[in-house]
Length: 462
Image 1 (cartoon, helix red, strand yellow):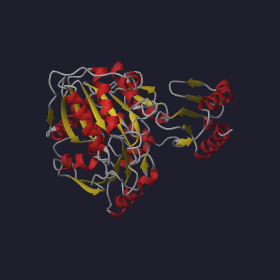
Image 2: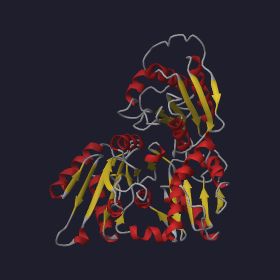
Image 3: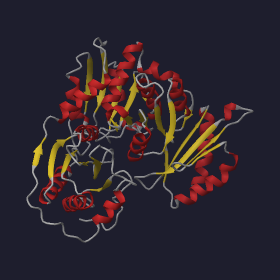
Image 4: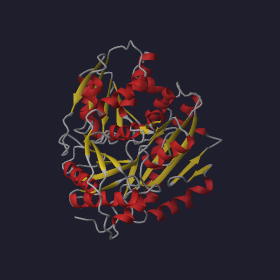
């Protein structure tokens, strides 16, 4: 079925219910629109394990081949593996398309598109034009010959070789035991290739069997309830820490040996400090929802912090433009300049292992100095008129704010010279992927943060 509107074309990707909105006819039409809009000669294609992914991938490949475009197929892959394989082709492919709906539930599917340098095609970088082309009436010119399909069976080993080289782990590493929840997603395919090369890393594997029905839990580590099984295993197996991935393995969440989750912005601060060891003075981007801790930790490590808007397509573009060495989101995406500006949970793991081994500390100990403020976490609201809500908040709070940031929704900061304990900030922004407003609040105390969440929630729900 072909959707009747452009609602499936989002800021970061193409995503919708499958097969209701995205079926093989849609995939074929998308392939034709890509050929017409971008005129690639060679495209790399991969997919995740969702129930409709294989069919969508096959239809997409056939559309390319029928139009005379050559295809490099890597089959089942994670988003980081896909992105890095495109980037490492060094011009060998003109673009890449991955069939995936990332962390969304199993009833969804979608497509992520990148150019030949692995830079995303999203809002402001080609997605709007692709949507326009998709819904036009046209006939592609008949090619002189059909394209070919090459199956690249070495992509995974090349990816692992590359991240191990970047991490530059010391020859002697202490034995470390971790639990890993792959969430029945693509990390179950990728991680075993890394583990056999790290004999000192003992792993308790969980849900490594790819299954698009997600039989054990939703694969979305930002939702703390999805970490319950991991927490149980970390405690029962006496692991040093645990980690959980989303469906396409581009998000990774950590929990310490006590079972406490490591917030995404704390992870950003922790990793930024490690990256800056090899890039002194480097620019680090962090998203507008992040704790004050992040900018403080970056400065303390000799880096230059800069706030940015939410979303992988926007962040990767800004990283390239400004030469950032690292970027992190509260949603647990971690991006590396050394990895062609793409995210990688595996490289994040290697950097954390390197830091813990060098400092001789636990993950809990490494995070403790970064737990400086009381952050609410992200709170979602379904509202009818998002702009009206944002206008009400501006009217109520902007006149007394000490800093107004509008790079993504509104972030208002309030400093109290007479009583610093009452310093606080909030950010409200519209989701790019769901019909929601998202609220984040932070202050110096749990009680004050709760008060402000209640106060803001009342205004949002008016």
